[in-house]
Image 1 (tube, rainbow, N blue to C red):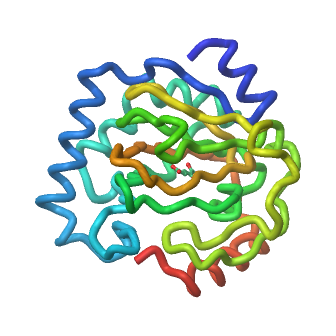
Image 2: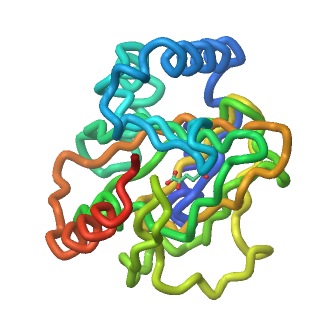
Length: 242
Ligand SMILES: O=C(O)CCC(=O)C(=O)O
C-alpha cells in the first residue's frame, strides 16, 4: 500500500487501492464463494448468512474465517496483514471475513451507519478492507463514504430493522451525496475504511451483481465499550442477521 493511500485514509477515513487483487486471485475468490454457497452453506449455522427479501439470494456471508479454510488462509496473506499492521496502530487481530453480495435486481440497501456501532471498540483502531470481486459501478450500488467523519466519534444510533445491518445512524449525515466519496471499483480494486467512517449503499436494481469480499482487523490493544455493546445487542436481538 502506498504512503499516499495511508495519508488519504488518515485524512478522510477512506482510501481506494487500485489492483489490490490480481485477476487470478479475483477468479479464485469468486470460484470459492460459489462453491461454498453451493456445497457447504446449508450445513452451517443460520447466522453464517443473511438472505435478501426473496428468501433465496445471498445478501451476506458471515464468519468465513470460521467456516472456510480458504478464506481463513487468505486473511493471513502477507499483503493483507502488512496493510493491517499499518492501519490499526499496533498488532492487528483478524475480526472477521465476510461478503456483501448485492445480487442483481434484488440486492438491498445498506443504511447509513458507522461500523463501530457493531464492533464497539475503543480506541477506534479498527478498519475494513473491502475488495471488489465484481465491478462496482454508479448503477449497481456503490458505497458512499462521508469523508472526515471518522474523527466525529460514534454518533447516536437507532435500530434499523434491516437484517444484516441492524443498527444505523439516528440521523442521516448533513453531507450531500455529491460531496461523499463514491467507491466505484474495478474487480480487484479495494477500499479501506475506518470503523467510525459514516457510509451507506443503495439497492442494486441492475442485472449486474456487485460482490465484495471484506476483511476486518482491529488492534490487539482495543477494548469493548459496554455502552456501545448494549445498544448493538438490543438492535441485533430485534433484527437478527438470519
Ligand atoms: O457493501 C456494502 O454495500 C456495505 C458494506 C459495509 O457496510 C461495510 O463494509 O461496513
